[in-house]
Length: 492
Image 1 (tube, rainbow, N blue to C red):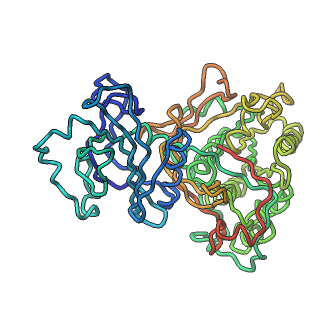
Image 2 (cartoon, one colour):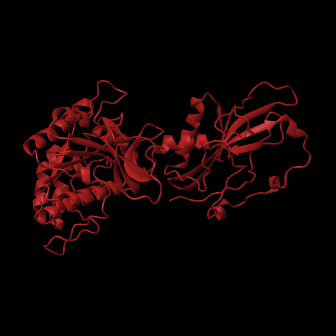
Image 3 (cartoon, rainbow, N blue to C red):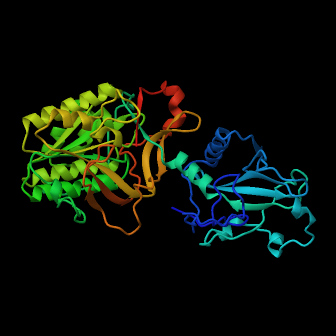
C-alpha cells in the first residue's frame, strides 16, 4: 500500500544528484517526478539507520536529532567562492512512521547562502506551518512547506532546500533491491499435530476444476516435448505459482507429459508422491505438512509459501483428471554453494534422462537458473549452466522475471546483521520494471543475454504469500535462542 504525503521544501524537478551540482542548474535530466511517497515495509529505525550508512559510505559525518527522527550530514562548500558569496550544503533527512513496519523517508539537500542573510522579506510560503501531517495523507501532489527544527547553521539564517530523489533511489535500492536468503539445513518447529489451511475444499471426493487463470501470451514456443524451462522465482509471492499453474495448463492442453520441479529437499519426494496420489482432503494435506519438515522450519524463506502449496494442489487436480503430471522435489537439504548447485543439477539430470520426452518446468531463485557462469565468482556454476552442459540434446531455456513494485515474504539480513523473515517490499531494477496495466506474458530474446536468460516473464505487481505454517513469534526475535541458522544463500 502506498500513502500520499506532503513534502518539505521545494521539490527538485531538474536534477539534484550530488552536493557539487548547482541548485539552479536547469540542465534537462531524465528524471521522473513522483506523485506518491514510497512507504517502506521496514521499521522507521531501520530505514533511518540504512540512510545513515549511505551517507557514511560517502564520508559524511551524520548527526541525529534525538526524538525527532531527523538526520543531518556535515556541511560542504562546493567550489571556491569569495566571502559574502559563499554557499554551504548539507543533507537533511526527515522520517515518519506510519506503522510498526511502515515508514516514509524524505531526503533534502539544504543550501545556505551568505547572500540570503541580507534578505529582509521572506516569501509568504515560509510562514506556513503544518501542524498535523495525517490530514495530508490523501493529497496526490508534492507541496512546499517549511519544517521546524532546522537550526541556524554556519551563521546563516535562511535555508533553501530541494528534494534529493537520486539519494532516495539509493535508499530504495538498499531496502528493496536486495537478494532473498534461502536458509538450508535449518531447524524445524515442534511436530504439528493438526493443520488447517484456510479455504481448503474438503467437501467432495471429486476434484474441483483447476484454476488456470488468464491465458499467458508468448509461451507457445516453449511448450515442446523434451524442453526444460527454468524460471527465476521471486520467493514468497502469489504471482509466480499462479503463472506456473497457467503454464502447466497450457502444457497439458497440448497433451504433453508434464513435470513441475520445485525447490524442495529431494528427501520429501515420497511425501509429495503420496499427496499427489491422494484425494486432497484435509487429512491428506495434514499428512504432507506434518511428515515433511520443509513446511515446519523455524526460518521460512518463501519457498514454503501458501501459494506454492496451492500450486502443488493444482498439479494434484490435473493429475486426478487424467493428465500426466509429476511434481519433483530437486533441492538439497544441507548443502550450500557449488555443492548445492551440483546436487540440484544431479536430481534434474537424472529425471530428464529417465523421462526424455517430458516437458519440465522448474522454479528456483534467479541465480540458480542462469545458463551461463556468474560474473562475480569464476568458480561458481549455477544449476542452469550445469543442465545446459549435461543435456546438449535437451533444450534448456531460462526466463528472468519482470514485475511491478510489490511485496514478498522472504528472509533477509537487516541492518543489525540478523536474519529477518517477514513481508518486505520488492522493487525491480530499471531493466525488469514492468509498466502498470501491461499483461502477463513471455517475451523471448533474439539471443541469450549475458547472464544466461533466454527471455523475460512479465508477471505484474507482486503480492506476498506468507508461509502455510507461521510462527507466532517473529523469527528475528528468536535468532539468539535458536542458536542461529545454517548457511544462508542469497537469491535475487
